Every structure is written in C-alpha cells, then in structure tokens.
Image (cartoon, rainbow, N blue to C red; front, top):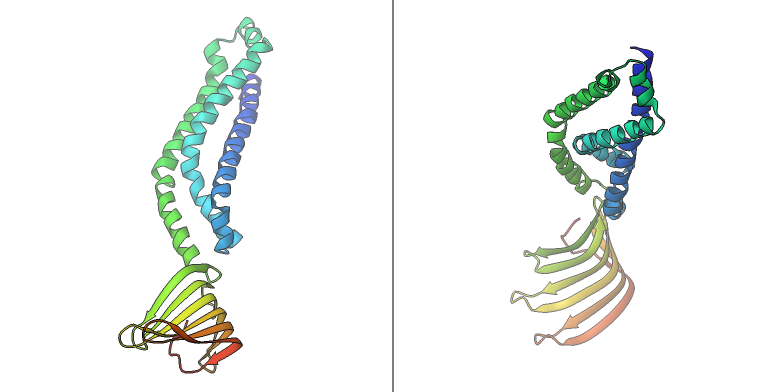
Length: 236
C-alpha cells in the first residue's frame, strides 16, 4: 500500500470508527433507558443483559454501517478539501480516481460485511430476543406480579400482589375461604405469607381475619401479628 493510500485510509477509518461507536452508544442509551426498569424489576443478571445486546448488535450494524460510511466519507473528503490536500494530490499528478480508490475499497468491504450480517447473524436477532424474554421469565430472582389462584378442591381463592419466582414468600395476599355455593365464609388478609416445606404449614404475618355470614356481612373480625395454618393443601 502506498503512503498516500495509508494516509487516506487512516483519516477515513478514524472518523468511521467514531461514527460507528457514536451511533451504537446512542442506540444503547435509548434501548437501555426503555428496558432498564424491566431489567431491575425482574432482577436479570448483567451477564444475560450483555449477551442480549450482543445478539442485537448485528441487526443494528446493518443500519448503522451504511450511514456511518456516508457521514465518514463526507467528513473526510470535506476536511481534506478545506486543507487543499486533494488539490495538492491532483497537482502532483495523482488522478481523482486513484485518490478515492482506497475509500472505494473500504466501501465495498462495508457492503460485503453488511450482506454477511444480513444473511447470517441478523436474522437470528429476533429469535435471540424471544429467548432472552423466556430466560428472563424463568430466572429465579424474577418477581411475579398480580397472581390469582383458585383451589377448586378446597374452595379457596388466593390473590397475591407479588412473589419472587422460586421463593416461598408471598407479599400482600388475600385468601378467601368459600362454601359449596361460592359464598365467602372467611377472608384472610396478610402483609406476607411464608410456606414452610419442612412442616407443610403456612405462616401469615399482620393478618386480618374476617368471618362472613351467608348474606355477605362481616360478623367477626380479628387481627393477628402472626398466624400459623396447618390444614391448607396449597404449596408454592
């Protein structure tokens, strides 16, 4: 490679790399700002997040590389023109085509890289996104929000505000014990419910127990700092 080619390529690549890094940074900032609340709420590990963005980069490069190539060419050639470098090259007997030859070569390499990404890695980005969502949902640290469970055998209905997947602790629950006609017999409202697998019992904290008559009126109401229930068949 001639000295002239190395000079033109060095000036171009410096701007090209900055453009790609800048566009990728902007994309990351916007995407992370949109998804960071989901990452934090679901306690997704940093390694899984990094792998997710690694799988999304190929399809982003398909869009960013042509734009970065165009901006880098305009900036590099404009700067060389303002410094009269192109005029000096032409005066020295170098044709315009010879000056632009290394830039044309880089453009062809960019086209080849874009085509390779478009037919190899980029099509798998959407599959990788779906895989990431499924893995995030199955992650043990993820919180499940707003769940309702109906135990038709024992005629109990559970309302759970949230709980951590794989854990035995449930936050802000209400358990309705009903009769055969679906009338509420007793209602348990607790700030927390913990299942003890060794004794197969439920422990409720800060409990309000309300007893109802067949008409749906509260006839008795009691409060407990802690209440242990041994006869419930439900498990997490």
